[in-house]
Image (cartoon, rainbow, N blue to C red; front, side):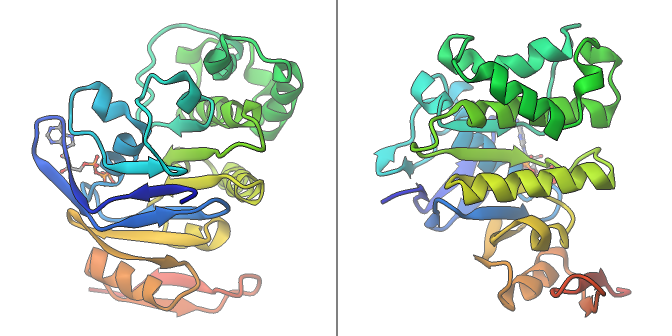
Length: 265
Ligand SMILES: Nc1ncnc2c1ncn2[C@@H]1O[C@H](COP(=O)(O)OP(=O)(O)OP(=O)(O)O)[C@@H](O)[C@H]1O
């Protein structure tokens, strides 16, 4: 079985509280999944478990397969050469330069890679961080920090072998970004997906998945309510159930899918 396959299971927080009841789910190559749900529904928990971060902390391991094999442990170099993670919280305090942070993407290859210089040039352009390279991390604005971490994460997968399976896990990639830089995330996800990778990204904007995702996973409080193609009718109904609101779809001059707008409670 190719891609990422999750077994039916319950995911737990670090204090062993049950957080999310998962059904069996499959995320295939060339699929980009948007993960949506209310605050506290378990989006980060899911991404952290898949990435392996929580197993490093001693929480329950996730029952999952990656291309037919049990999910590798967090510190597996091989796994780091195939999957890249953008965490919700960066937790970085050090006064490192932006250039040093972005190049951390090469750590899974021992810090150097034959394509590093070439890929770095592309990534720096794409994420609009040329002017930031010599700046120290704590001096950056919130959106600038987010772009740096997106660049680091994207570079890690750019260094991966295109013929190998690749997984991009993005926890709220749109957070703190202005509209033009949100478009960069959409394009990067689409490109990564088209190149054969599997992408999972949590978002709060219910219109965003139309711009970048092939599929959506909609969570209620602690459970998965719906999983399917973004273009399917069930997507909107699932959002209404997840957020306990009514939505209407307005026509849009440029987007065939229209624009979802909440109605008054
Ligand atoms: N270490 C912990 N101890 C106790 N509860 C935790 C812990 N970590 C997470 N939780 C709880 O697990 C639930 C799911 O959290 P999670 O961060 O996955 O939600 P989320 O869907 O990503 O939310 P948001 O949209 O607010 O980012 C929340 O109720 C959270 O308070």
